[in-house]
Length: 92
Image (cartoon, rainbow, N blue to C red):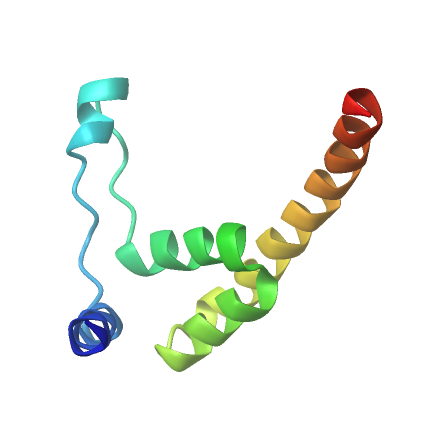
């Protein structure tokens, strides 16, 4: 429930561990270890956009990830919007 989600968010913000390879290792033969804070912020920028990614970075105290969150989120908008318009015109 909501309590479990909040506990997981607090753990992620408190001390972000390194991400484990797992499936990535099996698929690509060894993914570089990236900080979980970076992965969470990048994922949030791709799914929720720049505002929510920046809010996550600030809320968790990852001050160095504010600017990348805004840049990646806006880059996603800049790339995806023309592609979506093109797809709409092709499928219409």
